[in-house]
Amino acid sequence: MEATPEDQHSHHGHEGNPNEFRSMRDRMHPPRMSAPSCIVPPTEQLVIRPHIVPLLPTFHGMESENPYAHIKEFEEVCNTFREGGASIDLMRLKLFPFTLKDKAKIWLNSLRPRSIRSWTDLQAEFLKKFFPTHRTNGLKRQISNFSAKENEKFYECWERYIEAINACPHHGFDTWLLVSYFYDGMSSSLKQLLETMCGGDFMSKNPEEAMDFLSYVAEVSRGWDEPNKGEVGKMKSQPIASSAKAGMYTLNEDVDMKAKFAAMTRRLEELELKKMHEMQAVAETPVQVKPCSICQSYEHLVEECPTIPVAREMFGDQANAIGQFKPNSNAPYGNTYNSSWRNHPNFSWKPRAPEYQQPAQPSQQASNLEQAIVNLSKVVGDFVGDQKSINAKLSQRIDSVESTLNKKMDGMQNDLSQKIDNLQYSISRLTNLNTVQEKGRFPS
Image (spheres, one colour):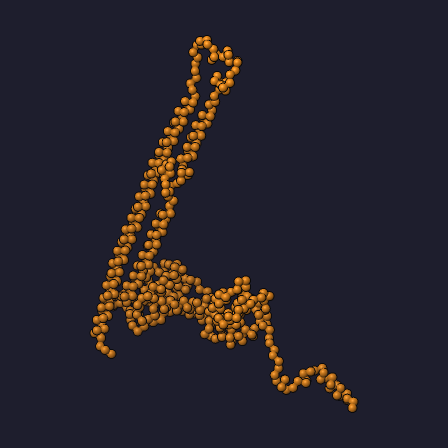
């Protein structure tokens, strides 16, 4: 039986479109199709150790998660397990997708294929998605509108403020603004505590010193037995008696004493450090262990003595004068006898009349040399005397400075001991007062 043209046409159509022969089951279970990755594969090879992946932090894309904190923790892990010759940015680019889960992973897969070429690009896209502008503005408002809570301790207030700053590291505020926001947000009692600690000159500090001092006060106050929230009125600022001026506040006596004691301790440390610097400057003054053998000075070495050039100049002048005296080469007392000397007057037995003899020149030169030595000795003697006077004045000055510093330190130590005794007495009195109140209280 021959095939009809319609059958031939149908057969050729099936061969041209093989999908027409797929069953319903095949059509309902299509093959897997994967979209290309958004990260361009780097040319450099990197071997990832299997034990690193479980240690990576995770980010799910929730509103309560902080993208900056996630990146910081992720970079710390990468820096810890960095391979010797591998690029750190390549390692971060390879490992970061393993940290994303749920909504964050869906976001990464939705990026345009081959749009991420470096770790910087991936980090920028990540922060743009999960740290939008409205979130940045909200955190900046938390910093600029910061205020202390009721009955909040100083170190708790400071730690909460630092957490707000760290939550938005791109806030853009200068240091002086950060100090101003915190100072304006403190309660009156905390302000008085701060001013007591620094002697009332907090506003005279520069911004960096102010930030350091706030950290110092928070660290010191952490060890104090400050009142908790249940003890209303002890840490809370209270108006003074009606006779006091309006706007004045007072601190709890115990806290006030501790603040003054901490301020006094800090100033004592500054004075001790200043004294150490002064003594170090005196100790670093170049002083020779042995005196100069020429002028007996401790200020220089023998070869550096200032009298040496003077002596060289004077001795050089005398040597030049002596060098001008030349003996006669025809002296009659040579080592060789000459027959022509037979009729020489000096060898004649004939009596001769006395002749004029020129005085010897070397004796005159010797006297000049002796005079130069005398002059040099006088110069050296004067210099030694002046140097001894300078050394005596320097030693007297050092003794005076040391005596003054010792007196100041003794006075400060005595004052500190007296204030410590007063503080111990006040604490003991407060303890006794609390004990009496406990005894007189009715059982609840």
